[in-house]
Image (cartoon, rainbow, N blue to C red; front, side):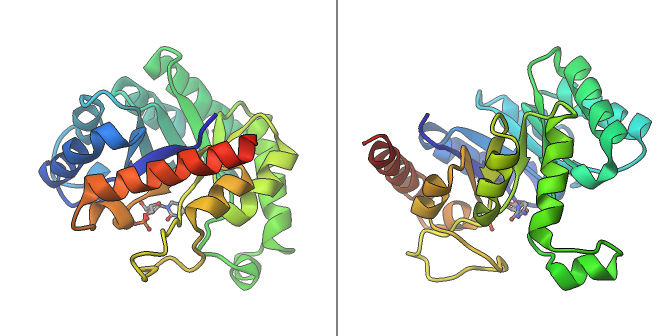
Length: 238
Ligand code: C5P
């Protein structure tokens, strides 16, 4: 399968997000709605973006007691989310509750994505919150837990895809932190990867925000990434 492209609609209001989404919809495979829209002033951001006809990834990063996460995931499923993120560190019961809630709310048409270790955290940060050992070990442990709890995929850095896929080959991997190299900036991303690196690592979907949404020609920027994805995919098949 050719790697897909999800555009992160990180905007303060739904009208801005919809304007960009309409402009790029023919060049992408889905949209991500994150905290800025979910917690913003406008009602129903997931429904409105889902109304464009492409899958919506609700990046809610749920982490609470199982009953609360189950209820939250159920609501996002009802609103038309195709994927919902949860923190794997919430534990097995919480992950299973998220899967059950989302399944019920979406009538079986959506899947949970687990976030293992935030890419903003390093070994020292883990030690400071009482998690001993290396980030890679923690990622493997949480990916294995997530897979056996019924999630559909994981969100991780490109550098972690190999670990995730070797731990749980059936999971799909979503990778943010992509930079095309043309814009010459990494914004606030600490560890970035190129489209080719993501495809080579086995990423199933790239999650790209600012390189598309802040580009002077968002549709052109999205199509250029799609072209790179199909070229890299062909290379992989050869
Ligand atoms: O603009 P940019 O391409 O950096 O956007 C990446 C998107 O992916 C943002 O919405 C960000 O919140 C999200 N994300 C990330 N790193 C993670 C998980 C999600 O950058 N580990």
